[in-house]
Length: 370
Image 1 (cartoon, helix red, strand yellow):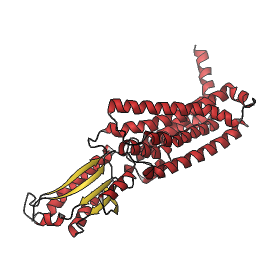
Image 2 (cartoon, helix red, strand yellow; image 1 turned 90 degrees about the horizontal axis):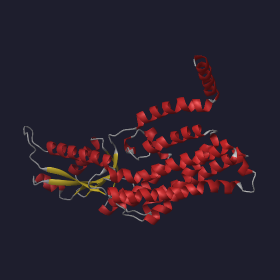
Image 3 (tube, rainbow, N blue to C red; image 1 turned 90 degrees about the vertical axis):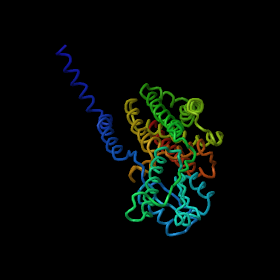
Image 4 (cartoon, helix red, strand yellow; image 1 turned 60 degrees about the vertical axis):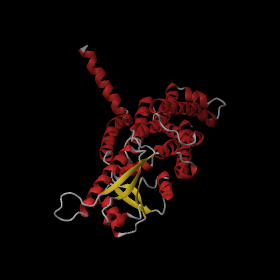
């Protein structure tokens, strides 16, 4: 056994050295992922975009807004004139919180009869909303203390910031996670299985046999990817049904619109899987490269961790992922009940991804099999 083991071991090391692409992925992918995700993943949420509805328009109201900003949990991204405009900003994703300061704010402070302000929070993301709620309590304490005469231990002017969570008032994490699972499952299935299915055909030699038949390259590719589109819609339906039955996930918007907008996301991921199949030669390589592309989708798209908490480079990478925009569509339709008027930007970006990736993958695929 001793005489046969070492030659076999040496032969495997030589084979591994010759397969430089696989060796580079085995060493490089963990290093890149550790560096990227170690810096990018943050659970403490800061700089939540917030709009201001200041009906008081006083020095005291401006001071309150500044106190909220000083907590570093909020960034003021604009002022609004009505509650309807707050809803529009939150539903479109341009703001995740809003501070509402009533007209009687200063009068209530001066008469010490209990001043109040309201903080509206997009609670679809429990982590972001918890950070906003904590910041509201801190800001209320700071403002009350600033109005207390020196030497007093207890605040003499009662002040409160009432938090109103929208879309997920119970702050259930399942309401946030389960819709995102649809996007993650589709990405995993479409990229991984599509790339491996085509590489498997190439390894077995059946791909070349199909090419010499009267079947066109376009028909060949469509025949490969259309079944996965059907499977993707079936998976999406299963998760929606189980999410409703097991976790009581709300479905406030149009399912017809959701299924229609999902098409661009499915095409983008199928094209990405096809692209992976053109740069890899074996199923092992296809699997490694697919997982390298899937991991950023899970960790940097906003599926698990708020993108606002990530450093700028990680947010840029997240902006280059189709899942980032599909999550906005999923949660927008299911949790907020919004329509294409608010989702057209995310839809347009997904369509650009789909067209661009299908063009690159088809061109590369034609070149590879040619």
